[in-house]
Picture 1 (cartoon, rainbow, N blue to C red):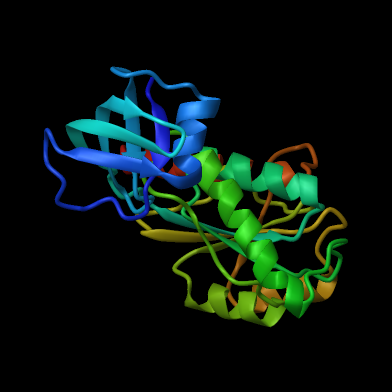
Picture 2 (tube, one colour; picture 1 turned 30 degrees about the vertical axis):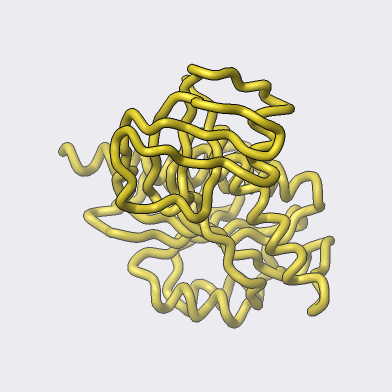
Length: 248
């Protein structure tokens, strides 16, 4: 399988035989860290669903040129899944973003839950969002995704309630739920919002607000998952269930 690299300015109309340049930190990673050689196959994407596959034509520490042999487009996934992720500890945040990206999440909304141990003050929120974006981008390259998950701005509980009201289907994961996600009927929904609480769990007030906004409370199984893994499990279950119900 070819290595994946990110070129934000990748032209949408690039054709076969054209040359695409990988520069900056991506070129350093390709030429110095990965030690790519002429003739090796690589994938280059703009992170927006378009990409090319090609062979390395030249390599330096500052620039890698790729001759295009195939133009590829990533099909839109259904349903489009957004995960509201309560802020975990830093190392667990990286794990949560990485795993959700690998299994196909489309967007992630950082949420300052009441019991979140980590607190993003106004001056730290943008830095935190940028870090999550970097983790999602690197995980996307590892997973050979052509479309990278978007990372929204930090949201409050009231703002999450607004997202729930605007959603076609909203599911809140809770260990005491009496209905499992796998027992839900996803029907033919085009999009789904999934809410993952913090390590300390949702407060009664948060749960009441989300249910009053129209969310369904569901569980992921008999065991209690960490916030760093629950999102990936929920996305996987939702995608598998939706696909199975389309073929009934």
